[in-house]
Structures are given as C-alpha cells and as structure tokens.
Image 1 (tube, rainbow, N blue to C red):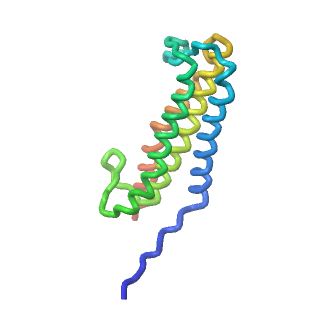
Image 2: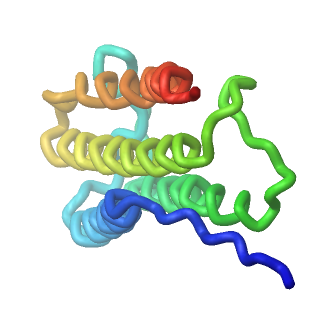
Length: 164
C-alpha cells in the first residue's frame, strides 16, 4: 500500500497575492485601453534616471507595458506549480537553496511587486503623455525597483534563521 503525501497547505495570503497580481494586471490593461484614444499620436516611451523624457514612440507602444507585464507575471506565477510537478528540479536564488515555502513566498511577492511596478510605470507614462512634461513622481519607480532587488536577500537571510 502506498502512502499519499499530503499536499502542503499554502497560506491564505498566497491567494491574496495571486488575485492581487491578476487585478493589477487587469488594471494595467484597462488603463491602456481607456486612455489610448485620448493620447497624442506620439507619446513618451523612455525616461532617463532623472525622470526626464528621452525617447518618443507611437501611442500604440502604450500596450507594450501590459503585454510585457502579462508575460512576466505568467512566468512568475507558474514557476511554483510547475516546480511541484518536477520535484527533482532544484531551484535556488543566487545558488542559495531555500525552503519550499520560502521559494513560493518569494515568487508570489516578487510577482506582486512587479505588477505594481508595471502599473506605476504605465501611469507615469500616461501622465507624461497627457501633460507633455516629465512625470512628477518618478521616484516611485526607483523605490519599487529597489525593493524588488533587496527583497530576495531579506527572504534568504530570514530563511537561514528559520532552518534548524
């Protein structure tokens, strides 16, 4: 008789983060669709480190951010379930083995922060296109990007402390 391994229960906040990612992604698409007709034919498409516009493109590029966000988030949200199907694969972050729950949490939080980042960039791009000026709150991009870079290291340090 074979014993069935009990599937590890995921915390409720995993579902909240997943639904949050999907809602943010939907908001990104809706924002692009709703604002597209009211934008000028040429819109800012790139900003330098100071938040100043240094590149312009057709307003159709407005849909590029939601498309990249969709692709990125699908990958981030699917890595966990795919890994559980191939248990012999060992995923690590920066060659540091992590506990399964830490890996799952890391991917969910990174996906959520990425969804927020894409929505913030899209909002700033639309604001800049409508006003013709550099976005006023560009620093949020750097704050979110910084959190995305630092967060995995925090999780690894906390994971190390949790290990027996």
